[in-house]
Length: 180
Image (cartoon, one colour):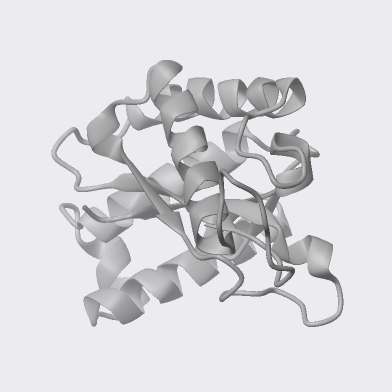
């Protein structure tokens, strides 16, 4: 296991333990712990997607720049984005088969925009655009075989920025495991 994988596991354990109110040691030792199963799912998917240069792992989530998936001001997935998402779906289906079926997990798809207001007839605000992008990704993943009950879409508009200087970093789609 390389250092970055180990660091991600530690971060995910710490986040899971804060949510569950337990120590990481207790969490890791609990055989039936859903948070542990989600952590294992995250670690397996991260390992399965290790060669993907188009996405980054930041803490407990996979981050994809919006420019890879969508044209400016649009929510139609571009061919390069479809290729990446097809790989994500295929790997997710493979690794989720190794997790107990009763584990309560969903893949939450978060759409984010920058703070530049959008003005077009389809999307009157960044709320609609970020939500439409998240929904487009969810629909694509479902069409690629990920069950609907394992997917959720959320639009954050410009209200969860990563940078106050680099607006491009704020335009992104994030994938993260959570409970349902």
